[in-house]
Length: 91
Image 1: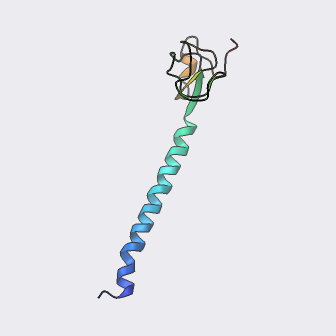
Image 2: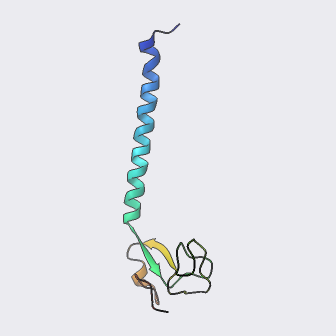
Image 3: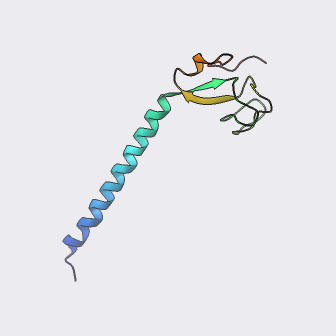
């Protein structure tokens, strides 16, 4: 039988490594979200990322270039697209 002190070390190391990996993943996801922006009025019908006046989920846009449908793009990309807007357009 293994002494208790020796048996606990691998479990503690594994738990520490898992906690660190989870923490790093969460930090990376938060940083990635900061580098994104909502770009309105450019999604194809049924291809928007989320939420419109008439729907609450991705893919709810009823028509191409729907004014309140958006795609999530890297920051700075939306302003380079003709007809795109950083805020919902008036229909």
